[in-house]
Image (cartoon, rainbow, N blue to C red; front, side, top):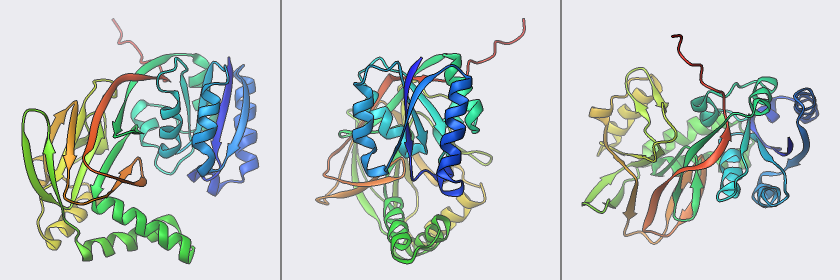
Length: 303
């Protein structure tokens, strides 16, 4: 198998280990697995161009090394091409890899790619932006922007900056008024957060943010049911301690596409943790089984 590995220089794991060590581990694991690969260490702002070039280079696979944002960027470049995506989960959270059952160590993740088993998975899209996990508007994009500004200005760590940004967001309590159109109905809501997931997320007492399926062609949409700072604070605390309950805390829908409109000229929208500005209406849709991905082969139950 001939492949290109796109390694995000700013990925979470790369910040805790020397880049040379990570590249060496990847290189050795690929060689042992019989994969003929070229490794390209790419800055985050150059990743989109590198992914497009890799998708047209004639290789048999493109392997993304990084977090969910990296995987999402490379996946977008591969849509419409019959080139499978390999995943090396080197980010901080690695939600997509975890939901897919991909091991979090480099040798084991490479072994999944070398085994060659492919599945076709859904991706989702808001306007022309692809995402593999989720997208949101309201308080979360504001918190991410504040976090990034603090990291840039003060040099704080990601989690320190995120905690401070979260409490600042709670104090400001931004509400967004949206008109949600599904084709069958149109509703208006004021909410601090709209969350749109690629397939259905489980939100209950024991599990927050896990998906059991990635190929049903569904979007899961959640609107937070709070109208005050105190209500949002309680919702945040329940999330932190794993006590969210879908029926109490969110209004939810499962659909294939929807439109979200707003009176605002521009909306801050997060897609897989990256914040962009989009002009409403926002058109969300599921692209069913549009992405071939190397994944572990499920064991068949014993007869």
